[in-house]
Image (cartoon, rainbow, N blue to C red; front, side, top):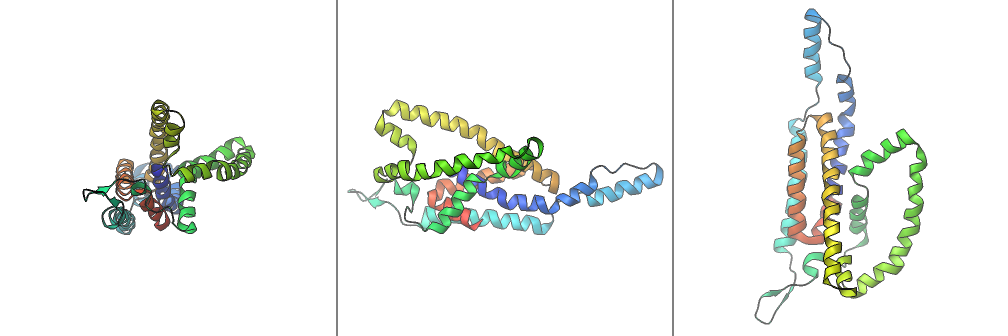
Length: 243
């Protein structure tokens, strides 16, 4: 869940850059080369118009990366958490990961929004509706029906039991084998999901701006994993709010 929360937020910022420089990219595409000296001059103009990141673009991306890492460092290394055990060591608890179940509504709402409106939706949904029609919008009906049921039926159970995930509930309700089986299936799903969620926007960003897609993928994975693992869920929520 934390990985989905943090992965979705980054592409809001990156896709803004794509939308800004996309018209410039369209100017370059499809220009036929002319023969002779005119063709050489045309190629030079094409090279000049080729989209690329400027120093200010790199500074903006670096600023987002550094602040997000700083959020993870703050909540992971300086935020007080856990309780002292009998031997004086800090005891493990579910709050060590959740870090703030009493957070206010506004940042949690922003974080949930970025987790469900990811780059897959921003890139895939318009394309789906463009090629196959607007019947895809009917998916909203199921979302409107499911959310109240989840809030009134499932959420109170998890909240009262103080579990950190549905897999912990599976272990309490059944046994450890069912919990492990469900967790393994989820890990496999997220391996495929995050690959698409990160690579697809990186390719679009690379085509529109000239930024190397492999650099974008490595940076996003490193930063997201760092502040999620160090700062817990609260760092994810605050980073989503900042982004």
